[in-house]
Length: 169
Image (cartoon, rainbow, N blue to C red; front, side):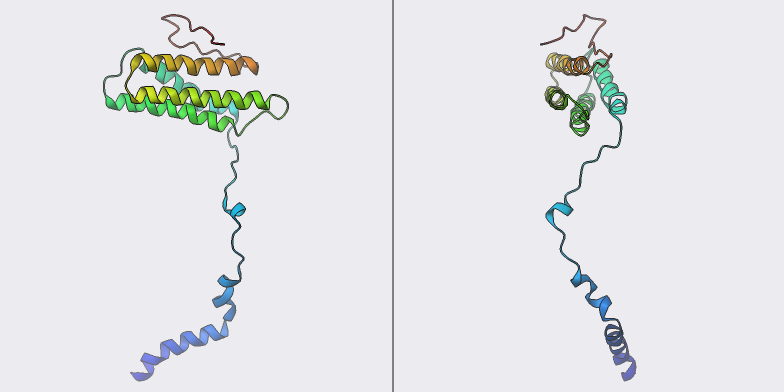
């Protein structure tokens, strides 16, 4: 019984002596530099996919939802979420500037989209239908200015059945 009680600690000690590199290998690793710990943003999807998969469906959903006042808090929360996804699309666009000329205009357009969508999200959070509709027009105008600058033949026309949306300068 006495040998059994002391046998296990001695066996473990013996393994530590036989394989010292295992015990000290953790201590030999250099510390991570702050630069290595910061992940790098790396675009995965093409810009067109962001537009067709995130921005446009959320924009169209907001347009449909804001034709009339949403019924309840859950609908307004959903509208706010859609606006925030459009705003995040602006952030994703910042990762994909054109390789040639136009990077500054691209960045300005992406930031403009992000800011317009953020204002829309704030309006939806207050359940203000008129301001939300106005902010959706701002989002559309930000999209249209960028599309015009970069030769994209898509035009956003919020509430087009009601009245055409003017392009803001």
